[in-house]
Image (tube, rainbow, N blue to C red; front, side):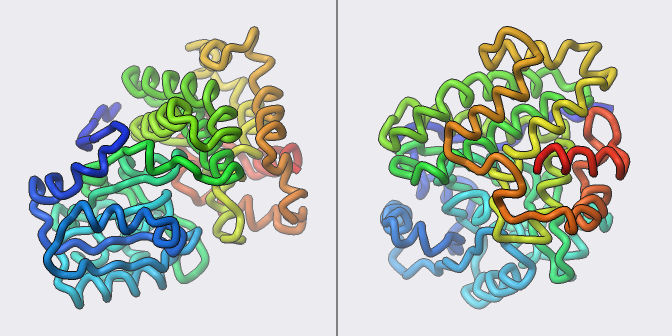
Length: 379
């Protein structure tokens, strides 16, 4: 059975942040907790958000989101949510802040530790409509978590897991490209390659969902044409708008599932949380695309040819090399070796990838030896 389901209300335009107070009122959030990070506060974006709320009382702010949010920080934010008797969460930032906000929305309204809600622990069935409402305001164009049905969080035992449920999808996404103006070049590049990876992997996933395929291909078209411009000129509003759209579109297609790029990057990111998820995705993409090429679903629907067309390439053979070339052009690391990853980690990475929720939704299932070959090709 194929699930085709689009449920998030999205406000998308430059200056959309002005709509926040009205959206809070519409969905019944009167005492929000804002979840963000120190960088967003320092950049002055948090002040803009609070100003639009025009709240007579101080709004509680949890600004200690780490690059890869974990179970410990979820507990800390939940404690703040409960102590202020909050009734909803406003996430402001990149995918980390939005994912943390989703973890808070679940754990503040359900009994049990975060681990019990992980999809690989059967946790999807434990997440109910009691989940606190979330409004997501992205400040990067990468994860698309503002419209995604899951959060990626690191458990106390070191596993990087997905907390996935329709109840986790933000009730509102406020996508304001102006909030991404001036994002540093390397962060623009890394988050942008994350968006490209999402569009590519969701399109390659074998589930039957033509609307999601169309959304993903259009997102890829936008991202591939604008990522270099956005990286080179942080004030290019057209490039920023298209990158934010591509990010959102990749995540709208998440319902098809992802694949080996993400099972590998989730696993390695759990082993070393300092590694940026988007950078890892960019590195793994060429090897995974090469592995997927022989899959019947890829061949039956000429998927690699359609990907090449969206990227403006002459043939499917150019897709992997073009991604490698773009990664280099953007100034991102081109291989795992540049990140300090050693072959001694390969067994741990493979073990984690085999257990990841994205493993089963690849066009064809990877064996441990397949994963080892992909890792070697990505060094």
